[in-house]
Length: 360
Image 1 (cartoon, rainbow, N blue to C red):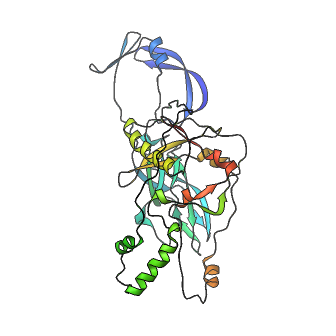
Image 2: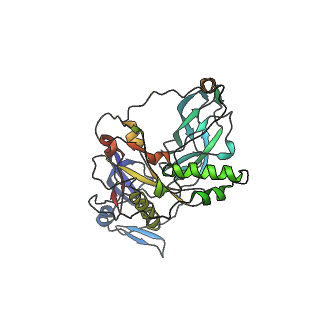
Image 3: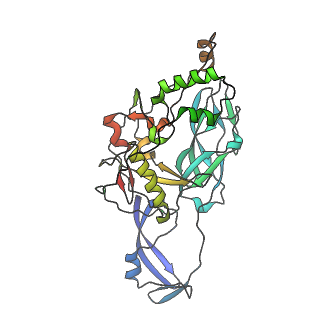
């Protein structure tokens, strides 16, 4: 929780005015939170049945207000011009009437229906709704032409995470159980039949299966079979001191699914328990199909990371290099985010924390 400062303010409850020290914080989706120290000091009582809040004997009617954040459209907050093969961070906004989303953390994501070669691509990212219902978003132009969007254009969706922003304390010494990966052996012929092989002759099919069996170790049918590339290691060059953020609250009914995903990552050795001076919180967001997406809020780490200046390859140069070729093949990592290793001395910077499990 980021405390911006403190002030002594008068709070009025009916006829009762109380001079109270207030901590001003950022990132909390509520106008005011009263702590238990305040409630005890002023003999506060909440009568839900009678709809009354009592402060030092004074009665104040309770008026309930719904502050639940909502999924809403994202609009461009400025005119956007992106040269060919460039990227840019710009200001976006949600509708001004969605005041319940102010200070709420969530995910900005593109609208699949708006995808077009004539529009820049909106990158999916974790963001915080700022004052004025604005937020920063990232665009990329991977075409060979300059692309433009007018201020006010619809660009995607904002999907809030859990609205409660309370902080829980977790012990990083807590040991998580590690599962052993277990899965049936991969059957290339069954996979080929599943994806279709009608266009292959018997000889072609036999030749293809011999080739696949020869290089079976490079195919991943499930996350339990993911390998890693040794061509490159990801480096994270940072400035300043380590960033250590507290964990964010997870609703109890989400913990089972979070545990399942963490255990799967541990079993496949994609993550490991750690004790690091760096720490970023986990944010959970619902996918369109209702499943839970586990995200890590690396914004503070990104702010301390030295940015790379790598130009996007030009399409015309690639076409010239491939001129005259008769056979083309496309190879990709099954889950590239998890298959490019982080350099050993930089791994501690990627540490994240989960309230009831500890640090990984």
